[in-house]
Figure 1: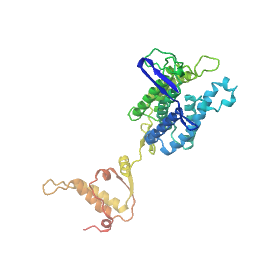
Figure 2: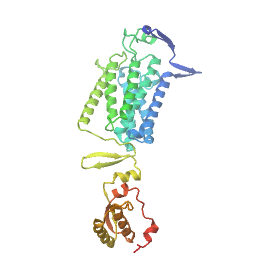
Figure 3: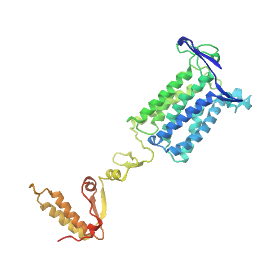
Figure 4: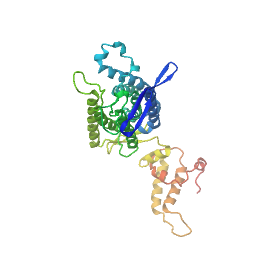
Length: 383
């Protein structure tokens, strides 16, 4: 039980960091982390196809990623507190006593999830995009678990939102959990809106923005915290150094890919088509037959026609040049219609097809023209 106060705002209340059910203690930290994870997964499943991955395969990545994420979070923490854990090896697996590092969790989740993605032959940059938004949602909500534990706070402050409790030794401090929660939830909103905008050019772009956005915030906030992990025998904060590295790397990659005009957006289930003229990939998303017909309308379709029809077609071509267009009110038949009628009559006589080319544009564009039935093809031409 903690008596939490925000003195300059006039707020004070009591919070309990656990729910007691008989002899079972359920901690709010675990409940909140679980809620954040569920919401992150729900977002990923709902937007997977739009972001370029299979929802079913994504779920496989999540299941493995959760397990490896917990392992990674604990391993990261233990490694940088090895002086203590080397003398208390029985405490290494005691995660119920605390000691999970968020960066370790992210690294572990990525390793496990990407291994599954590679096995399932998923688009890795697209998977990273989904993970980026999911991480922001999970982190933004999960940080409130630190509030219930009254941990992950910062140095003393005179700001109006300074927080104090028994956990802070009744000293007003920076509520670092709040800073990170707000920043991550705002980041989730930014990435969601960006993913729907024309500014998004390629898979992996959201992940790079995540690196810059989160790296910038963590670099600042980590400098305020009093419980940071340090590189052994130095005064360097591990998470701060890692955040600076990720932020710089993200900025460099965004600039490099922008300068190369890199473009690779392919929603899941689409087919890649390379246009040699521009050397850039273009993607068609699960088109229907009609849409595919329009896609190839600029090309010619090879059809087999008999030799005698070839000769007749040449005659029709010569005849079409001699056909006069009637402009009287009684007759609305144009030159084009007369030529088409003659062509149809000639085609009806075909029994054994031979190869000939014709433009498919006429088939697609002239949708009002009815096709001859099987019965009509069998009827001889009236002479």
